[in-house]
Image (tube, rainbow, N blue to C red; front, side, top):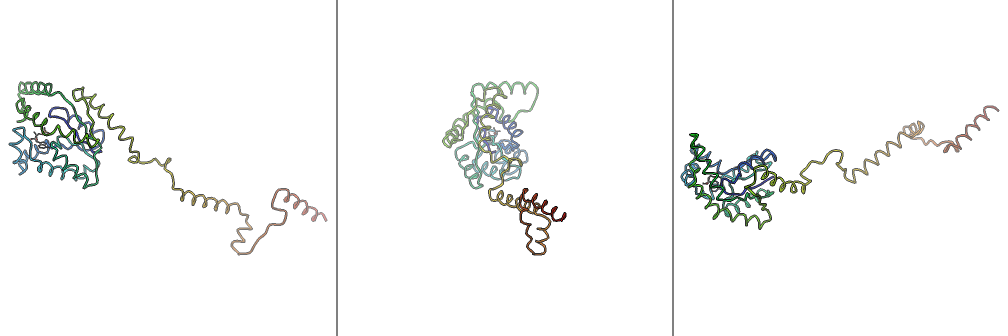
Length: 271
Ligand code: AMP
């Protein structure tokens, strides 16, 4: 199964992605996580991305498209994946369409988590205040000012993706402000009809597996042959071996005939 989770930062994409990973046994591909790992490892991509990410702006399309192209070819992504934070621009979405088409793959759905930006801002302000009170380290982009910039970037650059996927008939919108379990249930409801519509994806059970017609006819002919062989009298078997023709005595072909034959033999003996 190949899915995209669409929604602004803080909408709960990461949480829902983790649930989909467990449920569908697919991998979670978050470009944000991959870029943060690149920054931490000090790779050339990481060095290039760090300042951009700290400002809450978007890393150039070609950088993230190259990361995704490489990642979906890894063996663990063969069963499927849920994309979180990618695509984020229409050119990224078109690049993804191309990447999938080149590999003969298709998307099973795009799930949009619809949220209220005002409530999101309040949530992050509370979280930042709680983390600061506990003396915990904050992400450089984890503050209300940067979040405002990221939400604005989402509105301008990412929100138009909803139209792109709606025009392809792939968009499903869910109320992202609902409790986490309710969001999961809404996503499940979207995915289960898709799963039912593809019975070929399931392995047919042995009991139900049907043999092709030609095979059935061949098997029946074989059974009939072996039944016929078992019913042949010993004399017939001998005849097959010797090549001589053995005929049954006249009248021995049915029960009445056999009775007549037996009484004729008794008469002959008595004489
Ligand atoms: P996220 O964890 O998805 O919110 O991403 C954190 C940051 O990584 C974003 O603010 C961007 O700077 C960068 N980033 C992640 N994904 C993308 C993407 N698809 N395109 C451009 N920049 C991205």
